[in-house]
Image (tube, rainbow, N blue to C red; front, side, top):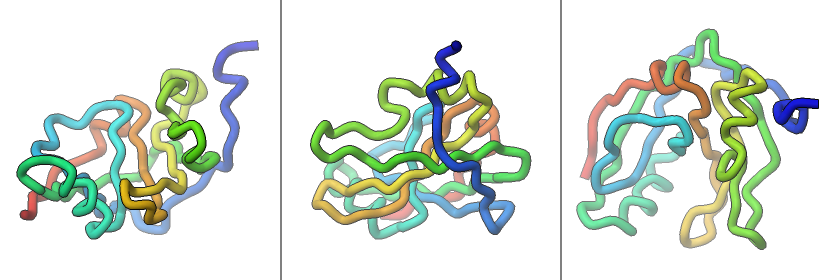
Length: 131
C-alpha cells in the first residue's frame, strides 16, 4: 500500500474552463503548491484585513486537464485543512487541485481551492490586485 492509497474524495469537474479566484494577503508572491484561494472576493478581503496592506489578489485558474478532488472539509476542532500535512500524498495520487469547505477567520464558511501540483501552479495566472 502506498501513501497515495489513503487519499479519498470525489473527483469533480468545474463547469467553466477558467475560474476567477482570490487570495487576500499583503503580497501574494509567486504561486506555490499548497496555495489556497477562494472564489469569493469578500472572503479574500477578510483574509486581507489580517495582513498589513489589505490587498486582494485576483487570479485565473485554467482547469482544463487538471485532476480536481473534492475532499472532507476543514476540521475546526483541530484547526486543520486538507493538504496541511499531506499535500504530497494527494500529488502522488495524481491530484492537481483540492476543493473543500473552509472557514474564514471570523467563522464564515466558504469554498477553498488549494493548488496541489506544479501543473496546477502553472495553470494559475495573476490578473490584478485590489485594495
